[in-house]
Amino acid sequence: MPSPIDRLPDDPRLDAEHVRSVPGARDVFVVGVVHDHPASVHRVRSLVDAVAPDVVALELPELAVPLYRAYVENPDQSVDRGGEMSAAIDAADGADAVGIDAPSGRFLRALVRESRSEDVDREEIERVVRGLATVTRRALASRLAAPIARRTDVEFELDAPTDHGCTDADAPEAQAADERRQIRRSVALLGALDGGGAAALRDRAREAAMADAIAARNDEESVVAVVGRDHLDPVVERLSDE
Image (cartoon, rainbow, N blue to C red; front, side, top):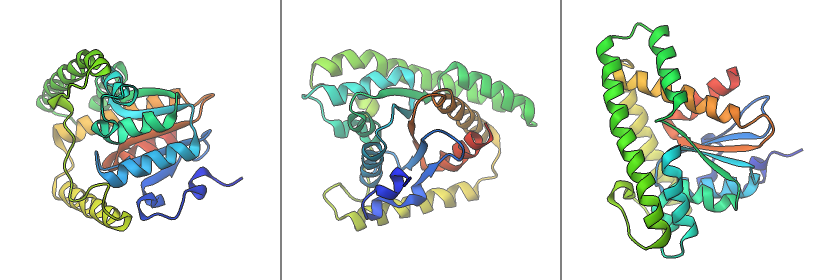
């Protein structure tokens, strides 16, 4: 039987390099994105349309999901405001939307595991915890903003979209090219870093927690997960090891 990926139209924004199916899993697809990029938004919407999953799993805190759902459900708000996350919810047409990113109990458990499995300095752990406090405050602010966004056209600075070198009015080829440039810059930046420290510890814990959350929904449900492009392969590798 053809994969839903094989049924996607011929469009440079839908390059299969940005989408992974998880071997041995029941209809689990993970799509990598450059957050708020028009090519990524189009890719997410197209994949969710093609798969029609039971669950869309989003690189968002669970606390923030109601705000992105409000952008979809309130006609006075703009779906564009939530980038690829709102696009996934909109295209899912009533499917369950869940947040799989920190803060969460899964993240804290993964942080403990990663801290024990690696030679991690205590100061690095403390830096991750301080950063988690900031992320938690932002997630709580999103949760408090959701009822307002659901009933009004008020926009919040906490979720202001990222500007890119193109818009959805540009040709698909221009969008795809701009997205590729941004991915190359991100890869080059990561390659220039030493791969250690608090940021690496945080990312390993996040990726482990996101993979665990996706796997927990896959026993009887199909899933499309939306994650940052840098997290795509690490999350899929962890899912493949489940």
